[in-house]
Image 1 (cartoon, rainbow, N blue to C red):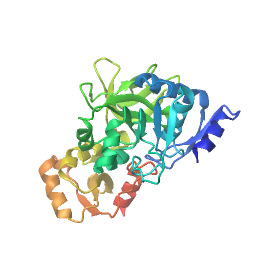
Image 2 (cartoon, rainbow, N blue to C red):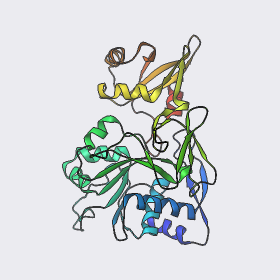
Image 3 (cartoon, rainbow, N blue to C red):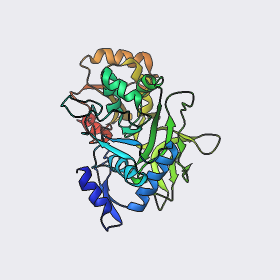
Length: 330
């Protein structure tokens, strides 16, 4: 879909349009959403960041999914000047074709997935452009500790976002850099959160969702009753020999020690019920096993290590947990 196609769809007579879920927890599915709710979400973000009409906004995400659509909607309804580039892994790359560089003057607002930010940091010219973005929001996946550390000295605001297709993009943000850096997400206006009996986050956002959105994200709510942080997904809890192990927590502990991409998943086991499995792009499985023994508690250590050429990812570059479990079961 092109920006012209989406603009025409946005401006037609229908009060609704179709968006697709990312597929991180199952098969992507279409959802029919109201345009007025997308507009409400767009205005919340622009108000939170203090964006003004005429500010430049970079669209570098696919318009097939909610994140790209919402960047366009923010520009449409808040009067932002939209700059579009191909949605690839290096959105700030500019080949000298004689045309004016789209990143001069600097961008006021951009949304990227973690992979795009990581790639941009590796190239000096792209890194310099990234640093000049006034408000950079990162969504579509967790920001790991190494990426967060690489961004902490950026002169402008960098944010991690929390949200999903069902909430029409993010409903909360947390600052990753500067004196205001925080490990807790702050909800946008008219958004409240709570925990259900399973400890999962429940989102009350009547401007964008008619009913409370019950997530599979295990969360903790701060003492102020407003801010929250994510502990992991309920469906990523591995129950091995009666011990409950959060896959994301295992990954967090290992991340500083492993250079090759890896993922923690599960496999059914007659003795333990489930076992912890590591999928890794590293060929040296012995070294990976040694590191796990040093870093992880005994009962969290993988019982199976499997080399894989490329970790399974969804179309929006999130870990494909369902496919990982299928691979582990082979």
